Image (cartoon, rainbow, N blue to C red; front, side):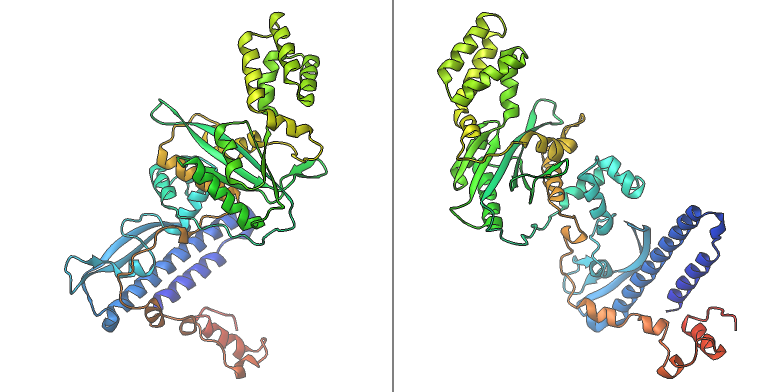
Length: 454
């Protein structure tokens, strides 16, 4: 109790000695440093007090015997470097079973150098920035990029809960595309798939947004398993219904069209962006020629389209290779084009490419990077988790195994309470006017004997 008293008194005195007239910026910075130092000192005192409580109450640790004391532990935390001392115990029944019991009580793993709260902050940052930059942002580079990499692979995030089943929704869109990511071996690119669920787009002023957007990533996963996960998310959010129309937007890749087999009442919509990549070389970039080609597509007249493209190739407006690629692409995705002009359908617009750029590429491939499989899988998963509104928390890391045969609450009851440090005034003294010297004297005692001018 004395050490806690001293810490609190020292922190308050140091805060009161700061001169706000030197500038509010300097004052706030210095005050923050004093508070953080006080928090660390208080944490050290409380941990060591808990360690002493464990040692003093042998009935709570019947199977454990102290073999060393004063063993130092250094831990990086959100407030700075925490240093404390504790006892090392061995199990009386199994001499090989040894542990720092207080570490287990406060949730510190055997080889941890970073406290879980700080680790969670860094992992949240690492979904947006590189490992090195995340460490610099959160803790001024005190943690190495290798440690950040290790921590982000340890996260076991919780499933984002569905607040309501939106059974009133009749149309749902699925945007599907992929990001190509460079791997460290330099010999191959990896593919990270992204599937985004959303309701029909809405516009507010100049801003268009996707209501109730929910992203699902997939790396190194069987395509059928991925689409089963997508179907489960749809059922969970919109119910298992026959009146829900689903439009799957994409570039026509086989893995995207596989979704038609797993998503009930779904139809494929070809992304215009990808069609234009094939159409522009054929038209030579001429907008008028592009309009003529689109007329054939709208009429679903493949024969006329084929003749027109052959004519363009004969006039050297495009190469035979470009013509063949365009016609093959249109033939393969004919149904996905026809739906654009079907008055009975409401396919809306496609934005799969933009979503991949924002959700995946911005972190995984927009700048030269080289990934390992495990790191790529972890970062892409947590990046999507973050964009979906999830926040990595300390409890998402592995917890200590329960090797202690007594409850934490029993130890806590033996530790110093706030009432022991600063007892509250009695009702009689509360009734005394605050301006009376007796009241101020009593408050001085309550506040640990700090000087008060009578």
